[in-house]
Length: 250
Image (cartoon, rainbow, N blue to C red; front, side, top):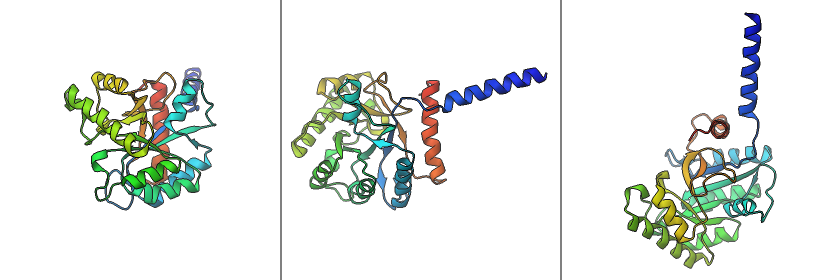
């Protein structure tokens, strides 16, 4: 019996070590608002600063999605412990609050814009968007109207993807290569439309980490909502994504 217990303990220790051992995969964090709003998807400025301080202290280095994909194509080398930070919807606090905090730690991010929300109260203006781009922020598309794409027919999906890309490119003067699915919704038709439209990749709502073998049009992200349990919850979300990836859980 003692031998059986000893073997069981060894197996458990080995399994836990395998699950927790860092792997050569890249996390993508998904934020929305950074402000004092009482909302599930709003992280306060102090919470965001604490999270960025933690990432910097752990040796993470932020990269853009363009840099990630360039490394997959052999056109660049990633830094140690690379991580991608993204913001969905294009809230004004991404510029006013999040950007100064990130610059303190020499960090960059990708901001996914909804053109029909630009210049509305609480959302970024085109001037702020171009200013963010000039300050190392990558700009991507989040559709024209923030609609769940899996609920739309192919022609409607195509308009949401193509029109948003064209309008954003017109305003920022650069090619838009990356997309984020509103509500994480997409299907095989959506992915084909994005490929045809010239997008290089798209961020989903699937939890996990990313490698060169990850579907480029179903990139995994780690959602960062308003934390109930402080920094510990943020750390657990990073760990959960690592475990999900090891176990192949979507």
